[in-house]
Length: 382
Image (cartoon, rainbow, N blue to C red; front, side):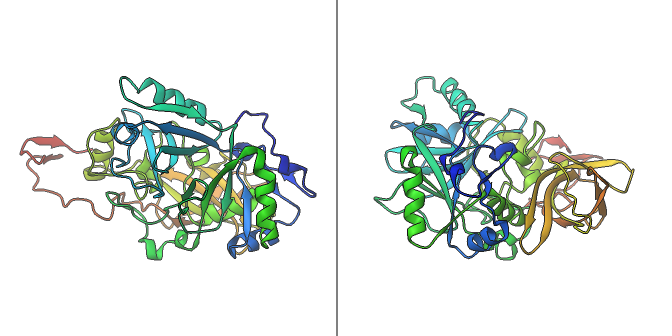
């Protein structure tokens, strides 16, 4: 969507527009705490109509997407949700998209500002493949629902968030799915005709659901440690830093752009940064801005930056931040904030040791700083 997009639902009584990557839809409708309760209890709908939608059709669509992205897609069954990353040759995240196929086309949902760029990149990679790529953000709108199930046959295209389960071929740096705070968060995206956005919301309200804003959905996302392209990703991001190998990367598939770097860090190296959730001191009623610097102590060295901020109904003020790997897991931190620094306690998402749950065991060292490759030839450590 364009920067000037404004949802018609902003005309609702009490609507306050969100800022940053969620500009164009409502932050809340006058009752943030009540809206969060409705969302967490499973009785709410969130306007996500600022997101972008790309449709890929044609008989080669799945094998082609499989060959150029991080996800295993050749045998993706209809109405089975996953997600993919487009990586640079160095393994940095360039695009991220929710993925679901309806049997006739593959649907990619991404940030509204990123949809055109993703489609343009896909066009450049078409070559002689039998695929057709269309940006349908102006024809289709997205609604968020606290529902865990996939869409059924005959229902609108629906993507059910797989987070935080470890998908086949994936791995994790953080907690197991059963111990992960994201396991309590149900979330899916439903594609509806844009001219029917208001009536689709009204039908859910008639069933007893409440229209809520992104204050509520972002608070649930942050509490679930769920990374997002528009917030946690910068030009240096690799998926390991965000524990994104859970759902977006298949480590056993064939070559794709960035695959060598992904494998090298997973097998031999360590991600240079790591995602944490920060519990912010709310006594001063101050919240940092996105991008605020995180320091080891007041006036001390900068060790990271805040990427997402939320006021959670139970946890209070919380944030996601990306820190240097060298910051101890238990270190107390300080976040720069207008009006005074805010102390922060970190909750570890990606541990500082930088080792995944299924990292291959080290082989016998053959020289200082060198380990043998699988073919017996030496390979330098990362």
